[in-house]
Image (cartoon, rainbow, N blue to C red; front, side, top):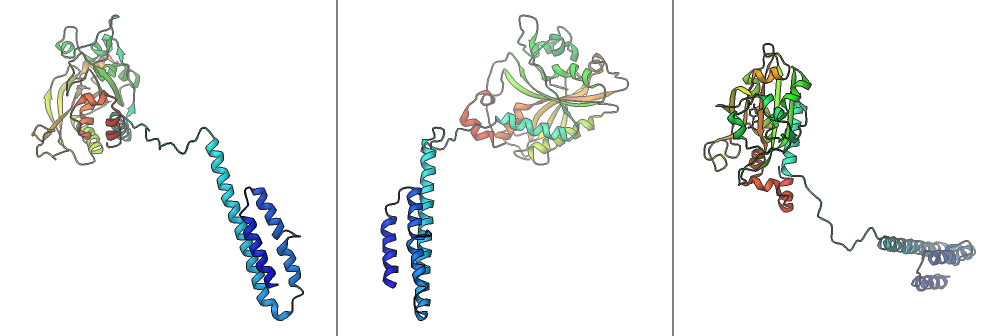
Length: 343
Ligand code: DAH
């Protein structure tokens, strides 16, 4: 019987080399392990061997059985895997030989920072609004207290359209509409693209972004303005930032300020980014002029508020370390990749 076991093992080893399909493997299984298979027949013979040989022969038959089963399973696995790969290869949509596609896009650093700023203001109770890119002369200038022939209209070299409308020169152009819509108790943030007929250089773009905010309520104070701006800057810079106000001039605010923040890059010690002053000029702002409130139908005797127009591109440049504003509009994929996730 021992020789028979050995013969079967050999036979199986030989036959298994000719397996090319799952069907053939199944036939091989039946030949050896099926009800009328060779190993099953061996088991039947086993019943009639003398008791003293049973132990040794039993072990030999068992290990042959296990070997065959294991081998059949392995052959099945290999063939199944090969079949799957063949199927995938013939499927035109997936080509595993192609290099991995690393051309996935990244967000513009502006978009990333804008989302962060929006989240910070939303957490402080602000509503987010949108503005138009083409505005009426009234919205862009008159409604925010910029009278005809006022020097501010020249200061902001405007792209005038043939129909007398303008490419919005400032996000403040949406103030009147937003104040009318949200009424005398509101906190609204409205980011937007602005346009000015300027010569383009490393610090000036004709197409740039601002983020404007207004808060109107009873008894709003300059300290409220400082608080909101400090919170926003702390959130963006991920460190404590102090702000200071210097006098400024804008027709839509009285008093008007220029808000500076301690330079986050040198912590106020002085570096190239802050022209060695320790301060970055970041955000013009002020207490909303009573005329602007009145024009939006809000009683300036009862309500007051502040507004700010964050020079957003400047903030993006500080955060990314980019030293030329033109990069931000360039759609340079390499740059977007590098900075798009850095902020
Ligand atoms: N609109 C101004 C500009 O583009 C910036 C500005 C100044 C906005 C003061 C404001 C503000 O809301 O209060 O130059």
